[in-house]
Picture 1 (cartoon, helix red, strand yellow):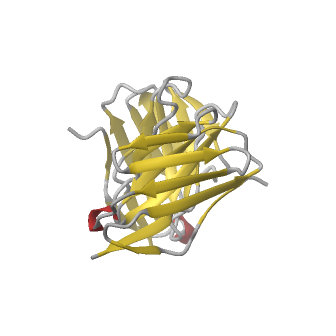
Picture 2 (picture 1 turned 90 degrees about the horizontal axis):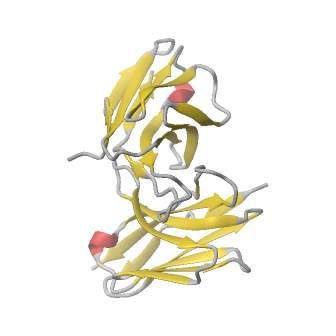
Length: 113
Length: 116
C-alpha cells in the first residue's frame, strides 16, 4: 500500500541550529513533492515544491532535497528561530494523479532559545 | 484579503443533526477541495471539484455531500451527524495541477466540528 511517513516524534532543537525533517514514501511515483507548515489552530501554508527531476530547491533559510531512488525528501531550516516552531507536512502528487495531493502525518518542530 | 474563507470556524452540534460549512475562494482558482483532519492531525482529502464538476470523491460516507454553485464556492453538507464526524474540516483551492506551480494548495483556516 502507498505510504508517506514522517517522524511522529517532535523534533526539539536549539535556536540557530539547522533543523532537518524527513519524509519517506513507499509505492509512489511522485510527480512532485511539497512541504507545508501548519501552526496550531490554523490551516496548512505552502512552503516549497520540488519536482521529480529536481534534486534540491531553496527559499531563503529553507532547503528541500528530493531523492527518488531513496524515496525520500529532506527539509532543512537553517539558522532556526523560535518562530519556526510549527508542524511541517510533506505531501505528494503522483504522476497521473491529477490534482490529488496526499499528505504525510507531519512532524512537530520546536525551536528553543 | 482572505484568500480561502470558510464559515463557521467553530460548530458544536448534537448527533443526528444536519449541518453545513460554507467555503469561498477569491483566488480565481478552478479547483476546490474539502480535507478532513482528525484528532491525530492526519489530513485527508475528501472531495475535489474542478470548475463545479466533482473529480475526486474519496471513501466518504454519503451523509457528506459537497455542493458547488460556482467555481468560487464549495459548500459541505453533512446529514445525520455522528460522534466520529468530530474533526477539523479544511476547505482549499488550487490552480491547474499541470501548471508551473503544480497543485499548490491554499487552505482556509478550518472549521472545528464537535458532535456531542
